Amino acid sequence: MNPLAEKIAHKVIQRRVFLKLSQRDLAKRAGIARGTLRSIEAGSGRVTIANLLAVFEVLDIGLDLRQEHKVERAPDGSLPMRPNVYQLMAMRKQGLI
Image (tube, rainbow, N blue to C red):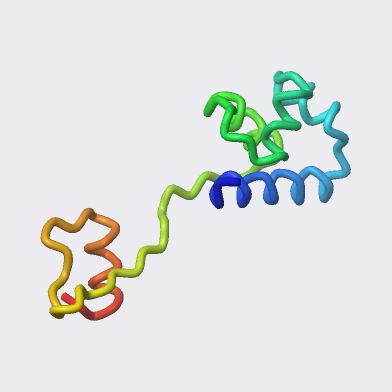
């Protein structure tokens, strides 16, 4: 299972149980098929963003697109040649730049 899909599945199940919603109730409120919700909760990669966002909206789950990155130096001590913005932020946070 994809680690991100596993994390999303766990969050959806945790929030649904906390709100005391059955799979049937959540699927109905989100306007998706119950099988689709089962796929989300199983961590299946075969889910559309629209369906996932519908579930997030019903469960009031925020979508944080930031991701923690850790940048490691190469054996010769150099940093990545063309770092992306997340790597740059991580390098700054780690005091590398």
